[in-house]
Amino acid sequence: MTDNDLASLVDAARAAFASAGTPADLENAKAQFTGKSGRITDLMKGLAALPVEEKKTRGAAINTAKQAIEAALTARRRELADAELALQLQAESLDVSLPGRVREQGGLHPVMLAMERIEQIFASMGFDVADGPEIESDWHSFTSLNNPPNHPARSMQDTFYVDIQGDDGIPYNLRPHTSPMQVRYAHQHVKRFADRVKAGEPMPEIRVIAPGRTYRVDSDATHSPMFHQVEGLWLGESISFKDLKVVFTDFCRTFFESDDLKLRFRPSFFPFTEPSAEIDIQFQSGPLSGRWLEVAGSGQVHPNVVRNMGLDPEQVTGFAFGTGADRLAMLRYGVNDLRQFFEGDIRFLRQFR
Image (cartoon, rainbow, N blue to C red; front, side, top):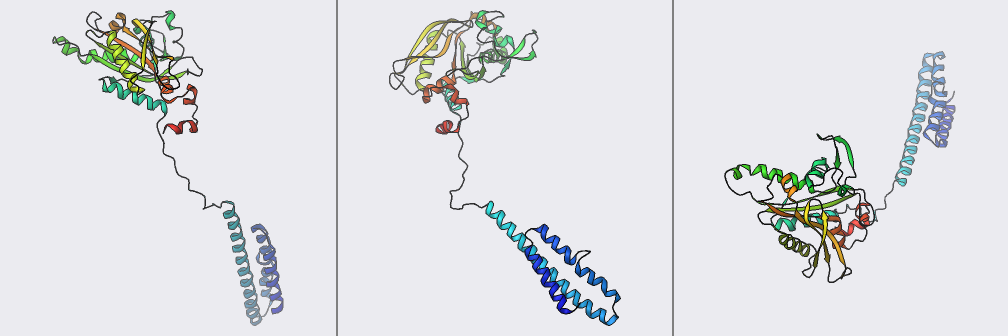
């Protein structure tokens, strides 16, 4: 093969490489020229039959042609890689003229805002804040609160149970109210000050609220199977219904920032208080003005409940109340459907940040 033939071979390789549109096509073209059965390989094998002097000359010419073909192959590989990268960059391109994506500042859930406000108000009145388990024993949830098994007052509350049994053989429940924490707190209080009582000193007052999640089978625009409740307890010497009215009236007027808010105590029944009353409020201005709205249940703690707390009802009296934090949040923020609090709609929640 002459030098002109080698030059033609290089041109043919360059043309074949240029027409290869993909890396796979390029590798197929390469095999025709520098592969094991390629044309350059065949020429290198034919050198063995040539005289020594001619072998050197022809070998150098063939090697020069091979280098030119490999250079053309490398250049084409780079071109295909650059083209593929350009397509990838185009597909993943960013419009730098768009505004940047900033992480929005988060905020507390409206119910949590209401809970914090409730805790702060009662803390200013000297109330402690108690916390406890959401899975409770039957005794703490009902029996200790003067609500024994088969009592009709249980029908709307003993609704969620778990596969854990207490020592009495009755399954544990998802607490329907935070009242069990009143009993738990009282027991801890009595134990804490037992030595002081033995020494003849009076038992310090119990003044506590118990906020937290509670559970009942109930679901509509103003009720949820899971809801938040705040219960309060004040026990001491000569703590009366009058104190209840003063404390809860002051709380409501502070929470809603309305000094002309009116409260009404309607006679009712709860097994754990006697006498008992529902508490209604009435706004004097705004979209809800003139309507009586129920916000809490309350009453003087029943003597049996005081005994179950480890205290003597002849020496200690007091009141208890329970209010829904979700309900108070709805009234404070003007929300007319409780379910909006728990649907996770960012558009709704963002306005409370």
